[in-house]
Length: 86
Image (cartoon, rainbow, N blue to C red; front, side, top):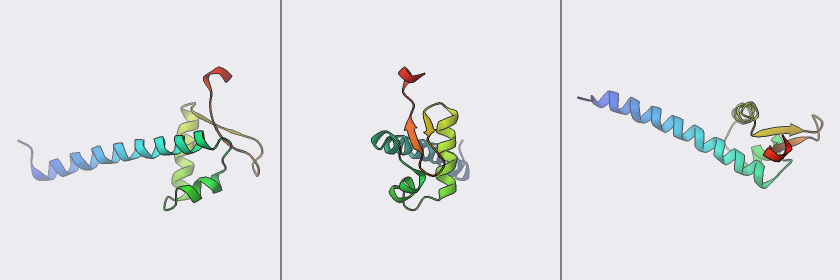
């Protein structure tokens, strides 16, 4: 027997996980469509998402080897890692 509170918790957990994956997928699509995009440009496209959240998401993608940062701190941007480049 599943209690109503337990069901709500399960839905919240599932929604949180799916929401997080959707956000990462959206960020990958943005970077893929605009190779070399800078953080300030991503912030404009993802209006309503905090800079800290986007930085954390980018760090996850870099850690997974999907995205890399190229260039200087001021003028560099984010690129999708191409398997052929490895």
